[in-house]
Image 1 (cartoon, rainbow, N blue to C red):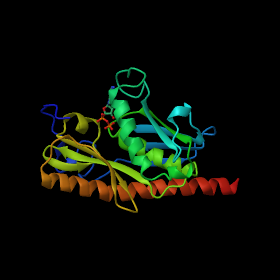
Image 2 (cartoon, rainbow, N blue to C red):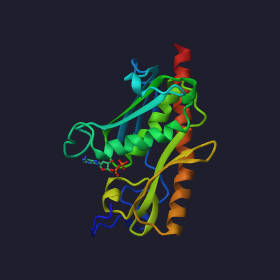
Image 3 (cartoon, rainbow, N blue to C red):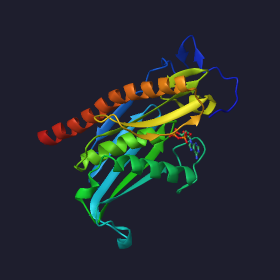
Image 4 (tube, rainbow, N blue to C red):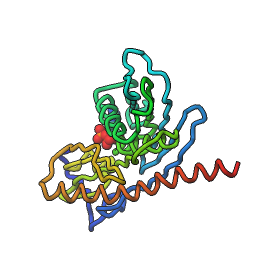
Length: 242
Ligand code: ADP
């Protein structure tokens, strides 16, 4: 973000990948793709490919981390070594620890963890291919995987980013836009309550631009939410026909 360059990211009102400013990349979501997880989701979002698996609620280990009032929700965001152009060094780093922490906090707002004291719910998200916007893709997939696991939830988490490139507020930055743009604002929205459960900003925006970006991301999240719901419905249709 904010890398100085002469790359023109918008030409004749269109972005380099042909999108309009408020257009999402293509998204496909499939629920229930892993036999050995309690809930799962495979999601493609532009060039991002992510797989989410949920295990639990199960006995909380180590025991001293268990909570007598609610389940502990663990979230692990992990980038595969082959997910980016240069090999990504395997294992956790500051970035993935941060993404995991804020994503867990977003999901804790919707999963009824108090129904499962002393247990834990593990949410693993593997980034198989990364092309900017992976924390939003991961959280959107994780929310579907949790619903697929049958965990009681009071809402769905839907995450979308907006930002600024060439002085224009745009939705859902791709890799070039993330590298050479001026701002990136990932957000996660609860569809029923309208609450924002994750908000970050890289780069800078005026108040007016921020408002524009937030409005754009919230509007787009409604479209993504429809795809999340459709993925869950499709799975039950498939199961019913077996
Ligand atoms: P997000 O993926 O949520 O947008 P960042 O803004 O931190 O998160 O990263 C933007 C993009 O930069 C990623 O989607 C990925 O394509 C690339 N990237 C992130 N970390 C690495 C890394 N360690 N090596 C190579 N590319 C990376």
